[in-house]
Length: 155
Image 1: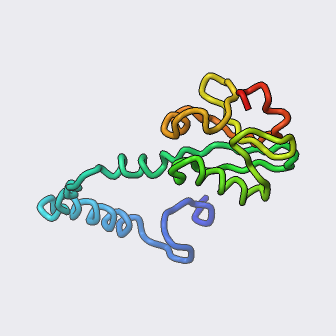
Image 2: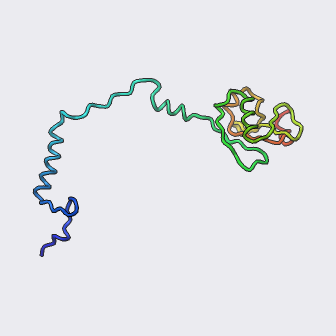
Image 3: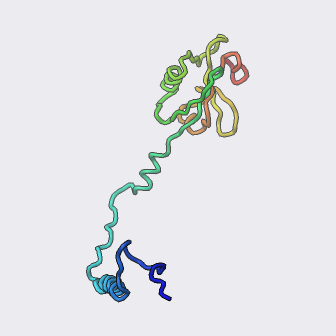
């Protein structure tokens, strides 16, 4: 009993390669690739330059994103602190973002005060420490109502 109709074979549908032809094609293909070892592509050239690509990409990704929340706002924002050079620049951006008036000198109960959580988990007033120290220690920002920020510092 012949099983030609159910026999498994390699090849394109509708073609019937003989076993001797398909074997010779495969063996010729393999033998030619192994015999031409002198035709191998040259090794990849080493990238020259500084900084290495990985370090460069790492520096790009080292943005200092922090979450910003505001009392009474239904949404949070995320900002990169490294694009700002000082407290006034940051505060102006936050005022534009949340459409409010942020005050750093004292409070009158209706304005907002910028606060931040440091690495220790303590809430502090933004502006109480030098800018570089703030950048290194800020985990997140919160714009509080001035009346709620009484206990953070002498306002």
